[in-house]
Image 1 (cartoon, one colour):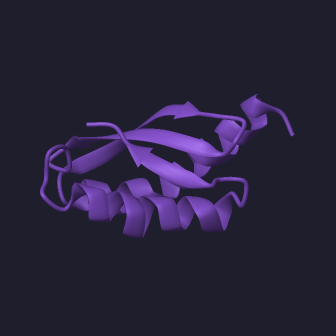
Image 2 (image 1 turned 120 degrees about the vertical axis):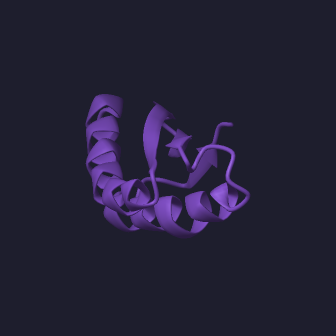
Image 3 (image 1 turned 60 degrees about the vertical axis):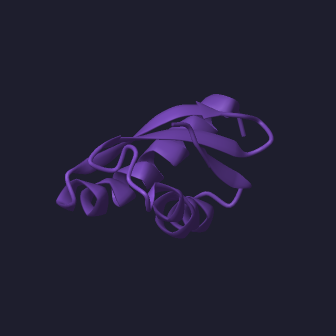
Length: 79
């Protein structure tokens, strides 16, 4: 699988997470995907800087991405 294909699959998985974040006035932006399965994201809106943002990334974003795209090893929240 190419890196471009992986990015497309990660973006599709993020699209499944996005409505939950948007309900709270936030969003998520894909920053980077590495061949090793590291995904960098940046929370936006009300989610950016929220004290619970790291929990949101690990318990929601990373969980869904790893279910949808097994190649994902970890999700890194860039502040």
